[in-house]
Image (cartoon, rainbow, N blue to C red):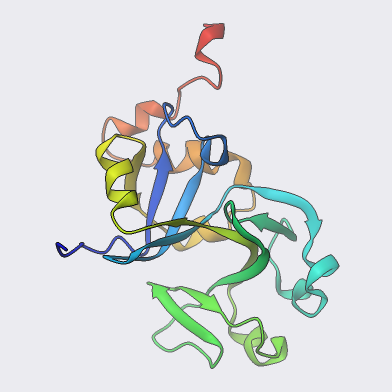
Length: 186
């Protein structure tokens, strides 16, 4: 198998033509990407379920909105925590993914991580791709790949993230941010 250049830490931004309803206008942070497949979480799918309803000890550390996000269509009964921790070293119970963004071990007592956390977001489920599957979707033009920023993980207005990420691009991608929700209404 050919070597895959890792896209971990980058964002996948759904193109307007992506037909899968699970990823309509989705912004996915890739947590892992290698020749064995890819794994990420959708950053802009808040649910009505409060963090305190499912992971009460973590609720005080969750950023606004303090709800669980649907991280993707795979393993919706599993929870992932992402946190932004500035600096070179993160605390025990946190593993750096990219830059200041890392995964939180939700088995760690929250009081050990609390003082270090810049922000915390909880995801139910994740987005996953088998070997070569994401590369095929990229080749088909289903996703734009762009750099992530730490604030993407903790955006207080996740419903605006798709447009915001596209708008900050210094290329023709910025124009796609104006793409109508339903082009047939034009």
